[in-house]
Amino acid sequence: MFIATVRFLLDPFSILWILILITAILWLLKNERWFRYSFFTLLGWLLISSTPLIPGAALESLEERYEPIRIENLADIDADYHIVVLGGGHGFDDRLPPNSLLSAQALARLNEGIRLHRQLPNSRLLLSGYSSSGRTSQAEMLQQTAILLGVDEGNTLLQKEPANTWQEARVYSERYGNSHPVILVTSASHMPRAVGAFERFGVEHAPSPTHYRIKKDLRKRRSLRSWMPSQRNMEHLRVAHYEYAALFRHSLR
Image 1: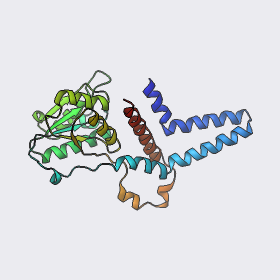
Image 2: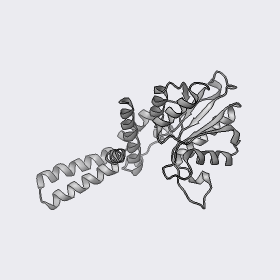
Image 3: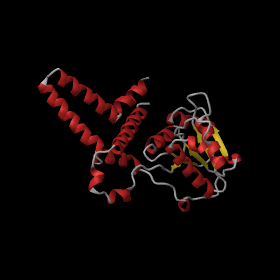
């Protein structure tokens, strides 16, 4: 409940609607002084959160910390790597195959894991994530999709217990420690938090981020239209807000 409340309060959309509600109440109460303060606060927040300058900088500060692994830069491609793919969410629909049930970020993480697995002959995909509904877990959904995409089931491992990043690192540490070289795969914005969690539990690893929301080449070709307010920019700020809040929470553990 507490985490859900924090997420709600950190969401730029929630803040925007709260400011709209306050402004509307002040207008109905005919409180001109506080209405003006509220209106300009609302306008300022709309510009800050929906135009690309602040959201882009906040999100890019997370995404640019690590780069995807290039196989040629690894010291030993024949090592028995564990490619740890962190969970990213999925849904349920009996009409659809597993790959269509994964969230966009979960599918991107799995794609990166498979890319690395294809190039590392002795590697295994370790797929992580629980089920909040008691049905198919995130780890199992990732495994089913990997098999559909041609991965041998014998080259997959599951950890179905973890409900969050901290638990994913703890469970892996308890089960495997540093018995295998680890490549950690997750979304680029989430990678700083994941790296911190695995370091806290003493797991040596190499990060390989994916699911970049900001492409630098696209930023260089921005037109005037790209600077207009958009929901996409608010989504970027939402992700950055949540990740920085989670990093702060991890620092207190």
